[in-house]
Image 1 (cartoon, rainbow, N blue to C red):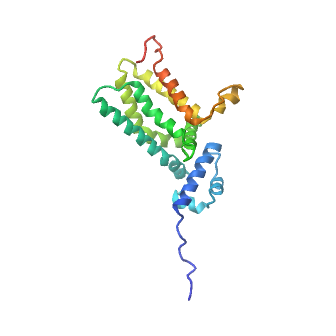
Image 2 (cartoon, rainbow, N blue to C red):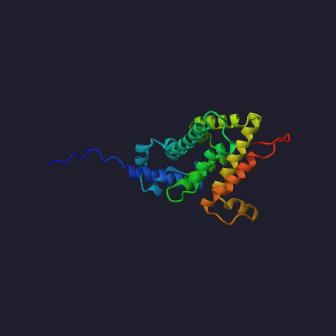
Image 3 (cartoon, rainbow, N blue to C red):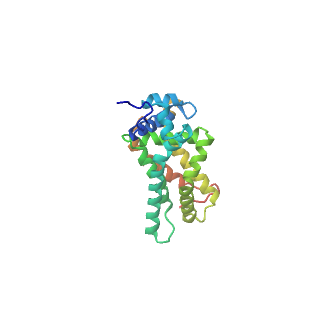
Amino acid sequence: MLISMTSTPPAPTNDTRDRILDAAERLFVENGFDGTSMRMITGAANANLAAINYHFGGKDALVQEVFRRRLAALNARRLAELDRLEAEAAGAPLKPSRIVEAFFGTALELAADTEHGGRTFMRLLARTYTEPNAFVRQFLAEEYAEVMDRFLGALFRALPEVPRAEILWRFHFMIGAMAFAIAGLGGLSELMEVGPQDEDPARLLPRLMSFLLGGLRAPLPDGGLQG
């Protein structure tokens, strides 16, 4: 009996795909996108380049999928929570604090997940805010488009007396604060030789939410107050 030498090899499994995504996610956090090579990813994932090409088609598509697999679920949770709050409000403007909690609280809960990769992913997402990468930022802008439109619209309705430009600035500052905190509590300690010692991610949520809500309610530059 002759055995064909051109038989098609079995396709890589989903387990291989998940290993590649997990390895890439971790290495991107450690080394950045440009500092992580395909060889590093295949080595960490115990896979080969053919498996990456089979599942993703190349590094750019792999980067996108690393973000999409968790970001899609995170944004869906945000929108679902906003939908629930708006349904309960029955057309009335929401309290600004509830909007902030719906957007940032879901992200901080994901950042507290140290068992299923949530913490690693949120550190990667935070890194994109401080490490310029035009390709990644353009992709994230598209992924965030609906979410940002809905949440900023809710804040505009909730704070009609506040200039929209000021709301945009406040939201920008809050995202920056969250990104810095999630990226690693050790950063400030290393820079100033002083800083927080408790790095339990589960305790980050109440601390940071208190800070964000305080920033939202801070006096406006002209002496006004946000409610």
